[in-house]
Amino acid sequence: MRWEFVKLGDICKTSAGGTPLKSKKAYYENGTIPWLRSGEVNNRNIENCEIKITQKGLENSSAKLFPSGTVLVAMYGATAGQVGILNFSCSTNQAVCGILPSENIIPEFLYYFFLSFKNDLIAQAVGNAQPNISQTKIKNTLIPSISKVEQKAIVAKLDQAFKAIDQAKANVERNIANAEDLFQSQLNQIFSQRVEGDVLSLSKGWEEKKLGEVVKYDKGKYLENSHPYVGLENIESNTGKYLGDLAPLNVKSSTFKFDRRHVLYGRLRPYLNKVLLPDFEGHCSTEIFPLLPSREIYRRFLFYWLLSPKVVLRIDKTSTGARMPRANMNEVLKFNISFPTVEHQKAISKEMDLLQIKIKNLKQKYQQKLDSLEELKQSILEKAFKGELV
Image (tube, rainbow, N blue to C red):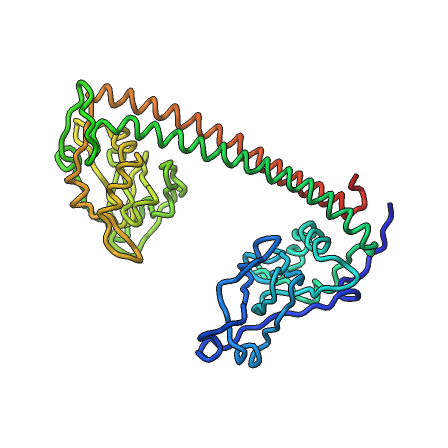
């Protein structure tokens, strides 16, 4: 099947939005007119937005009220190329292009078309850090000139295919969550020997002490040291994976020093659960506490203890500061920690290492399935707009 293509601007009207002056309270206070930003163009059906402006704000800016059924395309920055359909009357900022309803084309067809065309549109964007898709490029986009009957048939087939794919993705994502829950559950099972507030008795052969009796908070500092540096951003939540590199880095502020004997604990927003077992010597942010285990505690055992959900929850309760909560490490050192012999600690740690590897492999397999499902979506879209969808 061969289709004719026409410029979008020849069959649809388009317009960009605008932003009322932020300094004018009268443009925002007690506003009743929805005003949508480009970052909110993130669903097929756009049902609401966060900010409202006043009639004065609308009249004294380039913002325009788009009717329900308008197809929106984000034009700037990280969200460039995102597309959605307005399900209510709404104004937008200047980073959004509105394609107004037209008797020539149905919104759902246009939505799927721009979904298929997203990568090509982004490739035409100017600017590296903040890609910019102009309204002119959107208007000059060539789209199939086909009847509404054909458009509806294509939309129906795409709806059916995407519904099945989205269900498959939901199942895979549930499997990923289950794998992560399995790891957390196993940690809880092991370290429920004694966590403050529990009434479980100690298992045979386990000893209990204050954390500060068997772990030292090591406050040795470096200033502008050129060793490898670890910041909170270099530690993956829940897994302890190191996300940085080993290049020496000068940091113009005080930092803590550490080596292969330490366990690094991130105290900022402790619910993020950032713990690292370094296999190199370096320096770290003062938001990361180097903990030095005594001979009674195998450091990998301490690492898993700190990752266990009940311990994370309890540490989080020591936090102070509303915007940037930080764990109170003096309180944490007063926690009870129960532990078996070092040999038993090593056996437990090895068991958790093997489980972590197994779960990592499962998650990689599931991620490959998710990637394949996304590729399938793109393949179906490509066929749809070449007239090859059966």
